[in-house]
Each structure stands twice: as C-alpha cells, then as structure tokens.
Image 1: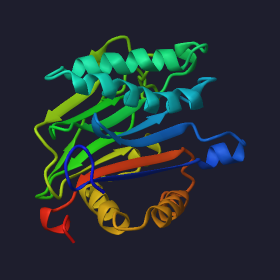
Image 2: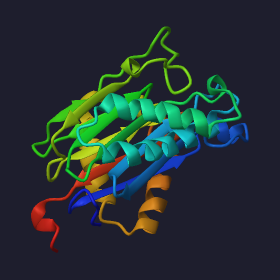
Image 3: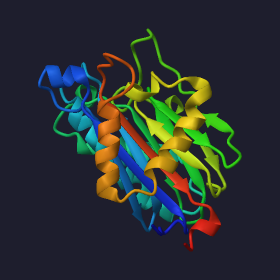
Length: 248
C-alpha cells in the first residue's frame, strides 16, 4: 500500500461489539476509521460513553471529525497541533447536531502522518496510544482520567485542548508501529507485553489480504482471552514497512 505520506505506510483496524451489548441487544458504541488522502494518512478510534443516549453516533462522528479536521490543517504549513484539536472539536460538534454534545460524548484517539512524514499522536479520554519503535522500545501516551476512576473525558466533556495528550515526531521510522485501542482492549494489556502485542498484530495480520484479515481480527477480538470481559473492543494499527520489504 502506497500513500501520500510516503512509501511503506500501512494500516488496519477492527471493532466488535462487547458481550454486554450483545446480551442487551445494543449496538457497538465504539468506532474506528483509517484514511489516506492529500492530507496524509491517519487512523482514529473512539469509544462512545455508554451512559450517553447518543454514544454510538458520537463515536462515529469523532472519526469523521478527525478526517474533516486533517484536510484544512494539513494545508497550513507548520500549523500547531492545538489548531488540529480545535478543528476536531468544531467539526465533531457540527456533526452531532441536532443532538446535544453532552449526550454524544466520546473518547478520541488518532495518529496522523502528514505528507512531509511528520507524525502526530493525540489522545482524549480512556484507551491506549502506544508506539513500538524499530528497536523494540515502547512509548505510551499517558492520558489521565479525571475525577473518579470510572470517569473519563472526551469530546462533549473537555472544554480545552489542554485535556488532550499529544506527541509529535519528525517521522514514523521504518519498522515502527503505533497502536490505538479502546479500553475494552487497553484495560487487559499487561504493560511489559504491549510491545509484543503490537509486533504480533503487525507480523501476523499485516500481510493478510484485507477480507481475510478483517475476519481473523474480528474472530480474535470476539474470543478475547480475558473471561467475561464485557466492553466493546476496538483497535487500529499503523506502521511503516522496512525499506527492503517495499520492493518485494
């Protein structure tokens, strides 16, 4: 897969309904999206807050709002990340209309690679965003919950871009990968095995044909190893292949 952000960039993702939503005949309130265009390449995930009546739409619109925001932001040379985040809030608020924002609250985590190669990773609310570098080292964005341990922030709750956790890098190196996952997955990941988890996702699923990969990922997430885990589960991965693999 070749993208406007340079050769070797690839991505995939999957989302499945959690056991509690299956039992309650409720829809999946997570969402994810992968996208490429003149703005670069990006992945985004979102977890609609289950206590909110418009949670499912809030999560879906979070993904679309990131896409909406990247298009004008990427055209402005050296535009700060805070501008991108403000645009995400703006477009999300427009997309959830006529519903109230507080009724549509959703987390938002995304990775964007610009045509220049610059990498931006941002997180608002629960979940995990982690980079596995080419040397195997791991970097995790440390987003923090606000208030009680069962509360989080998100679009529709956060009032300032300071509520986001953001890192930027000059590029995503060959053989490096970034994982995004909602808390249905993140809560079960063992800290010292996250790098292995990312590596396994890329090596086992990355080379599959899209349809086979989708079925395999959905099967793995539905058969999640933690017994009785009830939450919806969503992940997305973006990585850059080794240069020598790009010509095979």
